[in-house]
Image (cartoon, rainbow, N blue to C red; front, side, top):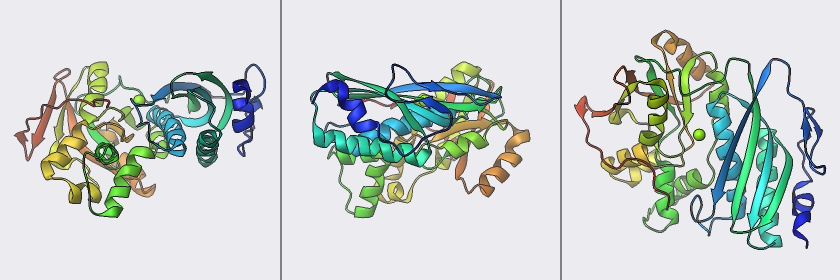
Length: 320
Ligand SMILES: [Mg+2]
């Protein structure tokens, strides 16, 4: 099989046919329409074998994660996803691998009603680059730079699960409860982009970011861009039942603070908007936990446990 036919052969058949796509796969470029009053948000992420996923990861999961991490960036901007483009670097044209991978792309594209509008394949080490595009009403994009001292800090879902999942996948840790094991590995392989949260934060949150590298590392982007500090209460960090029952309390805090790949949203809201936020989250059945507050001390992050200083030295996510 000739490589230049990979995109046509494996990815052209799609069930999502969006009305805003005039010309999709098959021409030299895609032609699309942006709805009136909306701004276009574009983001790109590459997943490289051995860096962002284990070489043993099944291709279906790689495909879904490649889409999810990009949609998570759109969610962090308050955007609604529309289109994706795929650039695939493959060491060989492996029919079975490509069938599983393209099934993963198709299923996730269907689920999120996004259309694959173009792609390219090259011969090289296994790497998947996806560009995702979506819409946000003019002036309503969420950013990192508008956080204010006094804002309350929230995180969606539970934190640290993917970090434990990674250790399980690397056989560095063993958990006897099979349900907990599967939950944690799935949190690593199949992250959920918090799109509904992102769109419901428009006009409410002052800042937002998605957690890809770990809480302590990612919050610094907001602190730097907004020239704020933060106090985080480690006893408030949202932890899954699987996490609580599988690791020690200190380890759980460590994972929640520093492990990457959770793809939850971290956002800040002013005191005035806090009530509206909590009402909106409750009515949409969205779980988000207040974990601290921003301060006026630029770029200073303080961790507290039961209102005492909490010492934590392991900062940031290390790729394996
Ligand atoms: Mg991001």
